[in-house]
Amino acid sequence: MSHTDKKILGRIEVIKGDITKINADAIVNAANSSLMGGGGVDGAIHSKGGSAILEACKEIIAQIGHCPTGEAVITTGGNLPAKYVIHTVGPVWQGGKNGETVKLIQCYKNSLLLAAKQGFRVIAFPNISTGVYNYPKDEAAAVAVHTTIDFLLDNPFPEKVVFCCFDTTNYNWTDFYLQTYLKEESK
Ligand code: APR
Image (cartoon, rainbow, N blue to C red; front, side, top):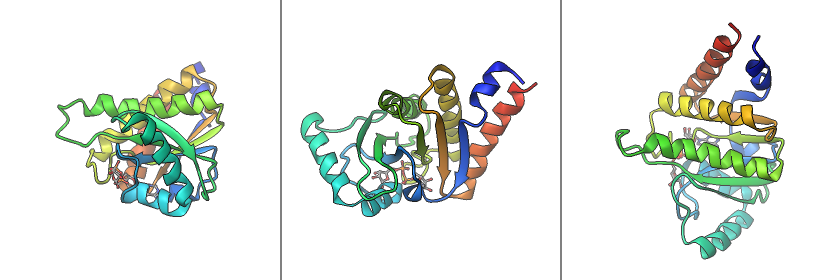
C-alpha cells in the first residue's frame, strides 16, 4: 500500500441517500447563482433547513450581487442536522466545450477550501450539476472524486468527505472512480 493511499483510505466515503439527513459540519448545496433556492437538492435543503438559510443567502447576495459559477459561499444550516451549508454553483452542461469541467472542478475545490478554512472535520457533497444542469454523471463523478483526492492529499481538513448520492447511477459511478483510484494506488 502506497503512502498516498494511506492518506486517502477512510477519508472518503460514498453513500446512497438524502443529504439533508446528514449530520456533518457542512453539507454542500448545488445552488444557482441567485442563491434564492430552486428544485432538486437545493429545494430539499431550503425546505428542510428553513428560512434562516434563505435569509443568510439574501445577506450574501446583497453584498456580492450573485454567486458566479464555480464559486462557493457558506451559511448556517438552519434546522438541518448539518451545522452549515456550503452553496456552490455548478455549470450547466452545454456539450462539454464551454469550460464546464474547469467550472465543476472549481466547485469542488472552492467548497473544500471553505471547509478547510473553517477547520471542518466532515463535509458531504451531492453530485453537483448532474440533475437539472445535465452534466453527464460518469464525467461528473470522475471530477468529484479526483478533485477531492487531490485536495485531501494536500490538506488535513476536512478530515472526511462523504459523497451522498441520491440515485443509483451517481452512486455507482462515484464508487467506481474511488475504488479504481484505491486499487491503482495499492499496486
Ligand atoms: N440529497 C442528495 N442528492 C440529491 C437530493 C438530496 N436530497 N435531491 C436531489 N439530489 C441529487 C440529484 O439526484 C442530482 O443527481 O442532486 C443532484 C444534482 O441535481 P440538482 O439538484 O438538479 O442540481 P444541479 O444539476 O446542480 O442543478 C442546479 O437546480 O433546482 C436547481 O436551484 C438549483 O438552479 C439550480 C439547479
